[in-house]
Length: 83
Image (tube, rainbow, N blue to C red):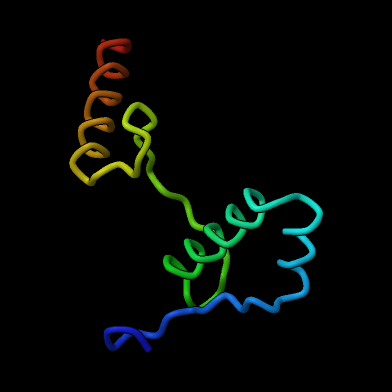
């Protein structure tokens, strides 16, 4: 428990992760640990992948406002095409 919330801890002695680290190096290990952490952050009950809106220009998750703005702009372009 951290700050009143359950938090997943990656074991240092995990066979698969240590094997990955030995075979492919630290970068691959860190990428897998980051992916596991993010999956658990968004879906702690099932570890299945969820979609996320991404702002590629800024290199980060998109805000709700950015998502709505994108949808409105897309809708307006489509509307103009068929008008």
